[in-house]
Amino acid sequence: MVNRLQAQDPQAWIEKALAKCESIDRGYYQMTRTMKYMSGADTTTNRRSTYFKKLPNDTLFGFAFNYRWISQEDTFYSRFYSGKELVYLDSKERKASITSVEKWAEHIYNIKHNMDFYDPITSKDHSPLPKVKDLHSPAYSYSFGRSAVIRNQPCHLVIMQESPDSIRNDMMKVLRWETQFWISDSDSLILQYATIYDMVIDNDTMSQFEQISLDSFIFNQPFDETVFSLDYIPADYQLKDYTETKEPEPLANESQAPGWKLVTLKEDSLALSDLRGKLVLVDFFYKSCFPCMKAIPALQSLHEKYHAKGLQVVGINPYDTKEDDLPTFLGKRGVTYPVLLGGKEVAAEYHVSGYPTLYLIDKEGQIIFCHIGYGENMEKEIEEVIQKHL
Image (spheres, rainbow, N blue to C red):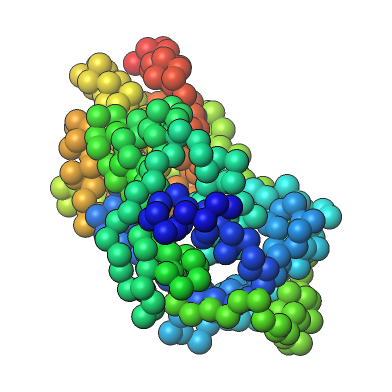
C-alpha cells in the first residue's frame, strides 16, 4: 500500500488500518456496543468478551471464537465455535447445545448475523472497512473529522461515506451511510468505529446509530486454545445435539380465532369479543420492522375504505411500549385504527413467527385469511377477501 500519511490523506489512513487488521490473526478483546435503532428513542448498551483465532479455510466465519456476554450477574450465556461445531452454553441451566457444521452449516450461516464481534479485526473482509478492491471506488469518499484520544491514545478520526446512489434498497431511501473510524496514531489500530444511517421510509426520516469500542485487548499472543474445543465445556453440563425447531404453521382457515383483551395506546382496553359482528383485520407488527412499516399505509388505506362498512383494523405490538414513542411513530403514518400493546402471549397463540403477520377474522370469530410479510400485492389480496365477507 502507498505511504501517503505525510500528505494527511484520509484514504491512506484507511489503507493502513486495513493492513493492521489483516496482520492480526488471534487474540482476546473486550468491546462495548452502543446501539440506537432507527425507530427507537433510546440507546442500548452491551458488552462482549471474545477469544478468536483466524481459520483461513473456514467458509462460515473465517475464525474460531469463544465469546460471552459480560454481566454483573453470576449467570452468563456464551458461545464458542471451533470450525467443526458451534456450541451454546447456559450456566443457569448447566446445559450445552452442540451444533455440528457437517450437518447444520446452512443453519449456522443463517444465524451468524445475530452474533456481535469487533468486525474490523475478526470478520474475514474486515467489515465495515472497504475491501481492498473497493478502496478507490467512486462510491466511497473519505475525510478527516476532529482528532480524539481513545484509551489514552491519540487517534485520527476518518469518515467514510458511501454514495446513496450506490445503495439499492426497496424498503427505504438512503440519505446518508457513514462510517467513522478512530485510528490510533501509533500503530493504525482501529480503537473505535461507528456507523450512521439516515433514511426515509414512507416519508418519515429516520436515523440509526451503532458504535463499537475496544475496552481492552491482547493480540497475536499465544493463549490456551481449549476455549475453542469441547474440552471447554464444564464436566457437570448436560450435553445435547442441536435439533431443528420448526416454526409453527399459521392458524388454519375456518379455525376459531383465539380471544384476546389488551390495552390500547389510549390506556383503555379492547377485546376480540367486543368486535363480534365485525370483520376484523389483525396486524402483528413492531416499530423496527421494515416490512411492518411498509405494510402500515396499506392497512390504513383498508381501514379508511371499509371501516364504515364493518371492517375493524387492529394493530397488535408485542414488543414496543408507549414510552418507545409509539404514538409519534404511528402519528407520522396517519394511523387512526386502534393499536394494542403487550401482545407477546397473543402473538404466540396466533403462531406468529414472522412480521408482519396479518389475520382476517370473520363476523363469527373464525379465521378466513392469513398473510405473512409484505409485498406490493398485499393490499389487493386482502381487499379481495374483505369484499367477499363484508
